Image (tube, rainbow, N blue to C red; front, side, top):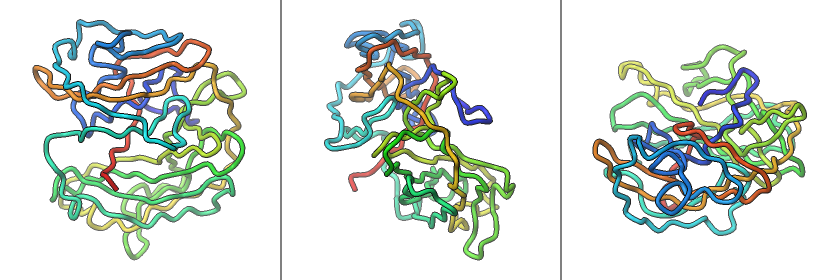
Length: 279
C-alpha cells in the first residue's frame, strides 16, 4: 500500500501483516480474508472486516503456532505490536553474508526522535538488491505524524550517492495509526515511547554492487512534523500462525480491536513487518 505524497495512507489498514517480499502469502488479518472467529482473522471488538473464504487462503492448513506479544514492548498502539514465536520461512539465512549493519546519518534531528541501528539485508548470498530497516523511537511526550526523512540517500564509503541522489526525495516512517487535525489518518505516526522503522527496498542487476558498496544511509529529520491523536479504534495484533497452502506458504495474524470504534480492514492491504533473530 503506497503513501500519498504527504505520507498519508488510507484508513483501511492491515495491522502488522507480514511483508510479501519476505513471506509468500502474508494474508491480512487471517488466512481467509480477515473473517471473525478462531478460524479466521480473529478480529474482535467493534471491528468491521471484509473478505470471504473464497480466496487463495481458504484451503490452507495452519500449524497452530504458539506466539505471544513481547513483554514490556512499547509497540501496543494502533496497528503495531512486537510478537515472538515460531521461526518464519523454511530456509535459514546466512547472516554473515546476507545482512550487514550500516552507519545511519540523521542530520538536524529534532529532540523528540531517536535514531537506532540500521541494517541492510539481501535475499541471497550474491544478490545486490537490498532491503533497508532503521529503527526510530519517539522519546517525546506527544504523538508525531507524517514523520519523514528528507534529502534521503544511500552512500558508499567515500560518501558518494549510490541510490536516491535526488535531494527532494524522502522516506516515511512505518509506525502506528494516528488521526490528523483534518480528520484523515496516517500510519506514519509514533506516540510517546513508540518505535517504528524506516524501510525501503532497492532492486538492481547484480553487477552494480549496491548491497556490497552501501556504507551509510543519510537523511534529515528536522521536521516540523504533524501533530496527531490516537483514533478511537485501536487494532492491535495479538499473535501469528504459519501454514501450508496449495500453492504457497502463508502467515496469518490474529487481531483485536481494543478501542471504542470500528476499524476497517481491506484484504491484501499490507503493512511492513520487521523480522528479527533471537538477538
